[in-house]
Amino acid sequence: MREGSLEAPTRHPLDWQNPEFYDQAKVENELGRVFDICHGCRRCVNLCTAFPTLFDLVDASATMEVDGVAKQDYWKVVDQCYLCDMCYMTKCPYVPPHPWNVDFPHLMLRAKAIKFRKGIRLRDRLLSSTDALGKLAAIPVVAQTVNAVNKNAVARAALQSVLGVHKDRELPPYTSERFRSNFAESRSFPVKDGKHAPGKAAIFSTCYVNYNEPGMGHDLLALLEHNEVPYAVVEKEACCGMPKFELGDLEAVDRLKRINIPVLAKYAREGYAILTPVPSCTLMFKQELPLLYPDDARTLEVRDAMFDPFEYFVLRRKDGLLKTDFKHPLGKVSYHIPCHSRVQNMGQKTREMLEAIPGTAVTTVERCAGHDGTWGVKSEYFANSMKIGRPVFRQMAEPHPDYLASDCPIAARHIRQGMGAEAKAAEKAHPLSLLRKAYGI
Ligand code: SF4
Ligand code: SF4
Image (tube, rainbow, N blue to C red; front, side, top):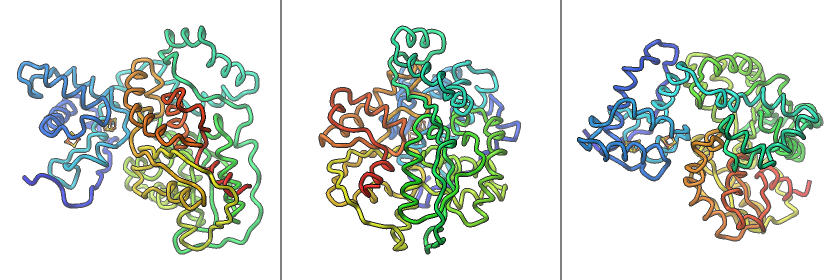
C-alpha cells in the first residue's frame, strides 16, 4: 500500500437516507478502523482537540492500541470534532481515492447523526435554530433585553447553569433593524456578464447578517452598486442548514433545503451569481448539500452559481469589470482566513482583494481559530476553543494592526476576545466593510 494519494482528493456523497448510515455497530467498526489509521499516523495531533482525545485514549489503554479503547469512549472523540474539515483538507494523505478511504469529518458527521437520533440537549437544539432564535431575539425591545442579558454577569451565570452557554463567551448582539427589512433596492444597471462571473447577483443574506450584523450585508450591496452590478435579495430564505448539519440533524437540513433550493435554483437558472456573505453558509451550498443530494439537479445548479463575495470580486477584476478607484489606504490589516473559506478550494481571494488596495499591508493567518458556529459557545468546549485559538490570537496581534478581519464574523469576535488587551488598538471590521471603506463609499 503506498503512503499517500497522488490523485486530487474526492469526496463521496453521504448516503444519509440509507438505514445503514445510522447503524451504531457499523459506525463503531468504521470508527475503530479509521482511528487505527490515525493512531499510526498522528499528523493531525495539533489541529483540534479531537485527535489528542483519541491519542490519549489509545496511550492510556491496556494494549496502547485502538483495540484497547472501549467503544463507548469513541464518542468522546466525536464530541470534540466541530466539522471544520481541516484534517481532510490540509493533512490527510489517505483521503479518497486512496484505498484507505479516510474522510474523518464525514465519519464524525455520521456518528453525530446517530447521536442526534438518540436525543440531544435543549441547548443544542436552541443554538442551532439560528433562524427561529433570530426572529424572536430581533423583535424590538426583545433585542435590547437579550443584548442586556448577554452583558450581565449574573444573568450569564444563570444562562450557563440552565442552558450550558459559557458565561465568558462574548455573544453577538441582536438587532431589531433586520437586514432583509431594511436593504436598499438595486439601481438598474445594464448587466455586463464577464468571462469568469455573471454580471448580476442574487443575495442569500444568511441568519447572521439578517439578525446580528446587518452592516455586512449593506456593505456588500454598496460594493455591488459601486461596481454597477444589479442585484436582488432573494425573496425567501431559511437558514442554510449548517448549524443543524453540525449537530447531525439531517432531517432538519432536509426541511431547510426544501425551502431554499427551489428559490435559489430559479436565480441560478436565470444567470445570477448567488452570493452569501458568511463562509459556512456558502460552503453548505457549495459542498455539503451537493454531497447530501448528489442527484438533485437544482441543488447542483445552485452549487454552480454560488460564489464567495471576494471570489466574485476577484473574478470581476479578472474580467476587467471591477473598479479600482480606491481612495483610502487601510494601513495594517491582520486577516484570518476561516476554515470554511479554505475548504471552498478557491485560494485566498479576500487577501488578494485587500492587497490590491494601495497603502494596505495584509498579514494573513491561515489556521483554525477554534470557535466553529456554536461549538465554542458551549460551556464544556469553551476552554478548548480558546486553547485552539491561541496561536491565531498571537499571530493576529503580532503586526500591531489597525484592523482585525476575518471572513467569518463569529471567528472575528472570538479572535478579538482571545486577543484581550492586545486587540484594543485595532478595529474589528469585516473584509466587506474594509473594501467599502477603501472605496470611500
Ligand atoms: S474536522 Fe476539524 S475538528 Fe473535526 S477532527 Fe478534523 S480538524 Fe478536528
Ligand atoms: S485524519 Fe488522516 S492525516 Fe489525520 S491523523 Fe488521521 S490518518 Fe493521519
